[in-house]
Length: 110
Image (cartoon, rainbow, N blue to C red; front, side):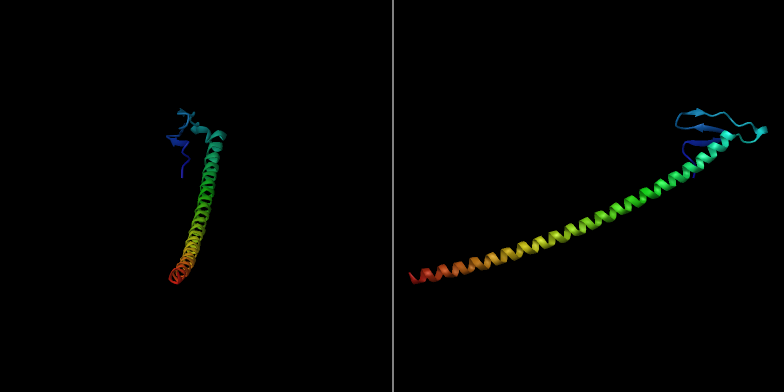
């Protein structure tokens, strides 16, 4: 995986961010210390990018799991709330039916 900021083209380095051509290395002298630093920087940059990507993936996986757990808990609470409201409404209906029966007996006695 190449560093997107440094691209080697015909023994010349281009800095894509600045759009400037870096001076080519002198072939008779081998690679200069600047070229070695750039290569090391490129390798370190790749490792750092890979590390950051892994960290980002781990964070996103943890957030996804937390969201799934949150929605599962929310769903469970909503289900319990619906059941509780149903029980309350059922008991209210029972009480209202008893009141209606009591009023019917009272009305029959009058």
